[in-house]
Image 1 (spheres, rainbow, N blue to C red):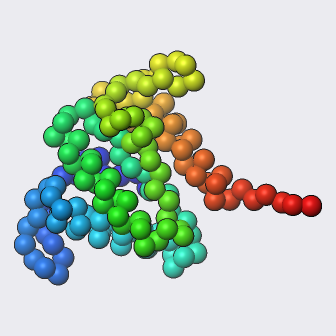
Image 2 (cartoon, rainbow, N blue to C red):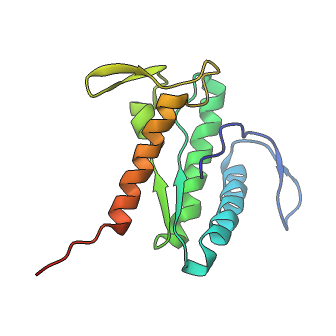
Length: 147
């Protein structure tokens, strides 16, 4: 899963009523609760693995506040399901130090990784994200055999 870049809208707290404005602790807790519900559905009672990607820092500082709250909520949501849910840290790969960059160094070459909107990944950025998911899959599904 890789979503949340366009978040930041107010939410109605389920069961408690009231409107929650982004991005305080109550908003993040509600967001985490919703993400946790999705993770639980996708993990199919423990029969499946879920790989959920964090958001890289966006160019707009106001959107960066939202992305940080979303990432914190993703990490909190995954906590009960550590056996089946992996949080893949794209934020640290594409925006090291939580600093927006249009391009990053990959194998010693500068590579443009962001769309012009300053939020989404372009094709090359998506390839980096896919590689990160592939690494997580290898960690989960590569077995070592002993003679």
